[in-house]
Length: 229
Image (cartoon, rainbow, N blue to C red; front, top):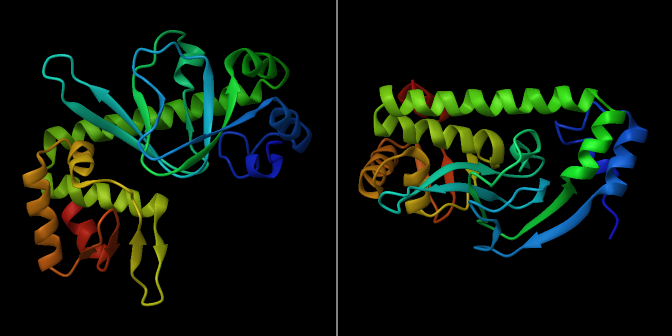
């Protein structure tokens, strides 16, 4: 099945490319699909492809060698890119990518991407910008682990998920189908499941959120923002 070049106009990494370059890139791409719980790649695998999420959500996790615990580093959704790091630093994957909902992705082999960049050097600038943004988010997350308490980190995580995956309901609330289990949400904020559950229960009691399985509805965004500071 041919890759939809129109979709690439909505991907921040590719949106600034000329239309003919986007169409050229689409012809070089393939399509993949994942079931919930299926791995796209494992930590330690040799990286040779860049992926763009079309539909669904994928989590990036890292397993601690000492105790086997998994840290959830990021949740990626439509129009976001993964696997680009090994383009600039060839070697094994540093994370495991797992679908947390059924996913559709486009992929591009690194060899094809490098050839494309030679003809379209502006794409390299966009990729460096994307890497810098991801590094900034990582630095922010590390600062939160040091300086923010668990309820603050949970509030900030909910706001980030809402900004990327949320949609407004008729009542004006913000519905966020994040697809994460309670354990995965705890891994995302770097805290125990019990502590995160206490924070969520507190937010419910304050009327800030309503929990719905693997989704949450934000009822008082400003309240969460104050708690996230």
